[in-house]
Every structure is written in C-alpha cells, then in structure tokens.
Length: 188
Image 1 (tube, rainbow, N blue to C red):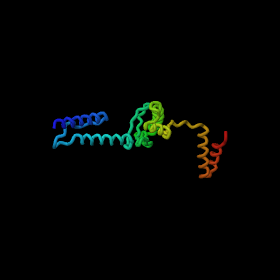
Image 2 (cartoon, one colour):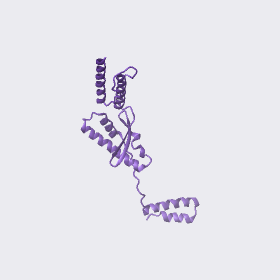
Image 3 (cartoon, rainbow, N blue to C red):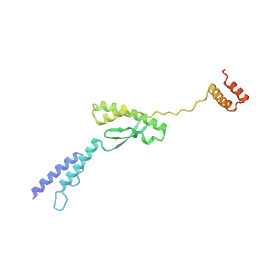
Image 4 (cartoon, one colour):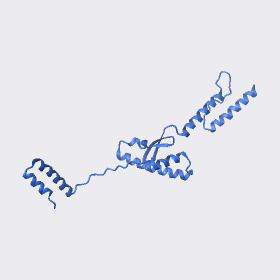
C-alpha cells in the first residue's frame, strides 16, 4: 500500500509541476484517500479549464478593451478576434468634438507606430501585428478644428446691406427704399 501511495504522490507532483509550468494553479497535492475528492481528477479539470480559457484568449473570441497613453492622449479601443472595432476608438470622448478629434488622430498614429514596431520586432507574423497594421490602413480619424470667427470685410458688409435693401425695396416698393437700395448697391 505504501508503494502505491508513493507512486500516486509522484504522479500528482509531476502533473502539478507541469500545471505550474503552464501557469495553472494546482489546488490539492494530497494523496487520494477514500471520501475525499480525487486530486488527479481535480487537477485535470483545472488544466482543462486553463487550456480552454487560454484557447479562447489566443483565438481572441472575448471582447478586449485597451487603454493606451500615446502622444499625451489616453487612447481607448476594443477588439475581438484580433480586429479593432473602429467605432469604439476613443469612444469615451465622443461627446466633445475637439477632444475626440485629438484622440482619434493620436489613435491613428498609435496604430501606425505599433504596426511599424511590431513588424520590426517579430518579423510581422503575429496576430497583434496584423491587428495594428490592419487598423493603421483602414482607420480614419475624425478631423475637427474649431476656429474663431473672423471679422467681416468692408465688401462683405456692403453686400449684406445691398441684399437687405433689395429685399426691403421689393416688399415696400417705395421711392425712398429704391433710392437707398441704389445707393447701397452702387459699385465703388
């Protein structure tokens, strides 16, 4: 009976070390005893769960969110199946036009920079490289600039006055309004 316990303990230890090296956390290293859960089965379930979760992550099926500080902007976006969902880029800033525009420009630069750097570092074959390079090509930032209004020129002011007086003269059809119109609309 002692040799059976020793072999089982060695097996559990070997499987446990293998699980730890894969990043799993083994919950129970005790020898199986009647009435207690079988640690090998529990460990197998844990490894299977880990492998399943790892496959889901590697395949990119889960929706992921990224927050990256780039060029002084916090660029946020979501991706799934290794494709950036463009409508989520800078989604937290969509209510403020200028801030949103600045963020989307930074996002475009981020995608281009990440694509270039990832291509240099791992020969361009990774899913991250494909994701960022695809976004670098397809993503279009929002360009919005709000500038202060400029002063109207003298010519623009005269044209507006002329147009207003043309309308007034056509409505009232008086000699006085026609004279004001003719004076305002005369070329100088």
